[in-house]
Length: 138
Image (cartoon, rainbow, N blue to C red; front, side, top):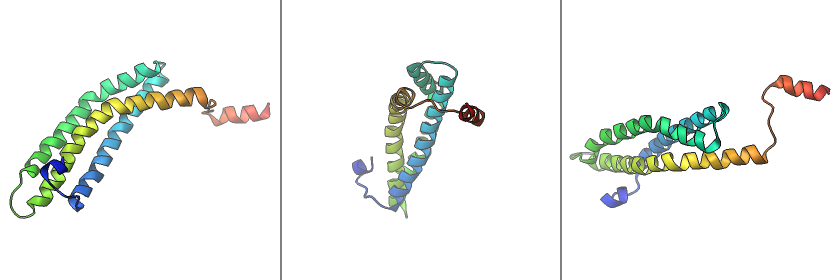
């Protein structure tokens, strides 16, 4: 988005990128946690990932819209320091639009892939230390 408006990669844009990484990572972790929770309750792999994305859709949408609407005044700023404000805002708005699409489709897909690999290729992990001690004594 910054390239469309002709902004260069400066400290303001890099600050916006750090902001995007934090916010999108937090949201992706929440989707994954919901999917893991559904999986532990006995849902199927694909069903748990889709259900987690469905449940988190409204909070994600509210977060994204709030961030975009909050950045719109910075995108049209004028006066001293306006170039930095516009650079930051355009980076965040473009990143949020692209990031929400990636979150809603790629995170559940990657969850399905990596969870399947973990369940089928890795040995079962023992959760309770008591079970580990009991197995060592046998």
